[in-house]
Image (cartoon, rainbow over all chains, first blue to last red):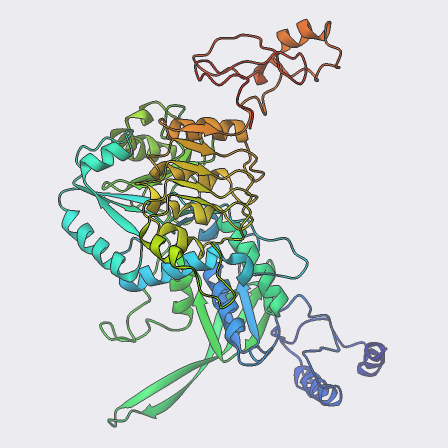
Length: 402
Length: 196
């Protein structure tokens, strides 16, 4: 009713366009008048982002404390922000994701593995925590009246193989991992052959095998679980693309008297899909969790604009890399006990399901991360020979998908 | 050997502190991932029964490798949260001689899982799902028995679904619940006797 009253008063000149779009040639300073009226109305009817003139429900809110850009890690940051806030509703969080179906996201296209076998102690600690999180996922992400999550976790472990050159590093790493609390054991080639008779141990000097908290699971399930929980916690979601950051700079002086320019982002422009419409979102903090595309987001924020060689001049060194993953069938292949095996040449594979199917690939650089087309020749030339050398049963296999 | 009214155990109990525990029957207990710490500390444990434990899941099975040296008998029958993915970690238990994996509702394909577990643990006797579960009637056997069977025959399966496992003889065999012919696993010596 109020809407109709406004329409009558403001007359037929009112168009339906959003306040955020650029209008040319208006002699009446319409935008200014409209925003004045809006401010007046909002002072009469306080509370919430309510726009009397048109429907903005598809746009993100105008104000948010934290804007997070990204996939599963972004959702995880949002989750912990809301978990750890001092008062319920104290932090308003907005998650901006370019693709709601996550068709191009690294998360759902990955093989879904979790391991503690890293070379940095911090990574080992993070991964141990993640394993505990995944184990108790239905306590962390419980939503009233919703069914529990089934991550389909395979606790089969990772088996990393090292050649003569890598053996010393592997031994050092395993020692560090065990100090951090990871359950990893080292195996000699003889022990390896005894444990997994289907492996060809030629060229392997040492192997490290994760005994607990390692394996693979369904990342899509984790993603959906996080989304569901976040929606129930009051986090706002928006499908759009971050196109611009508006920041303000101020000159500051450090304790030692040096002059610095401190730049702070205070607005994010989120562009809607398939349209030119965008919403400026005022915010205090932006979290860049865009994974492979975080380099691009950082560039938008001006990271890397500066004299080369300085910290300001260094771009965020993250670029998207395309990886192929293949699914094949091999009736005589390794059985139920097969872990995720990673060869020193970079080829890796794991079991998929019960029907003698396997997924795997080779972690080597491929060109053109622009599209997600799969190159089967890559499998024939790079992946299959290495896998067949390591697991003789893979001499006879048949690629089925991807 | 219960504690008396003052809560003190009898002296006999204290004498047994040094005795290694060889068998634990935790059937129906609400033991969980952390609770397993107590069992995994028993390095001489030979027999463990976790039948119908409601909180024992795939993550818990991932911890059992610590008993690999001593464990000979393990029963996981009736645990609602165990799936075939957790059973994959049992391959560490190379001393295992008897394994009971019957009646696991979360296992998607019990017959196939049993075969894969048997291949994984060649020295172990695996009690489990009825291997005939999930198999469909072969078309030629179904038409032969339909004439004599008092029970209506199962819907005929298309020919490509008739399972025949490599290296086994096609022999029609009498099934207790009706006269329907099924292909039999050759050579495992189990036959009718072991129905879990």
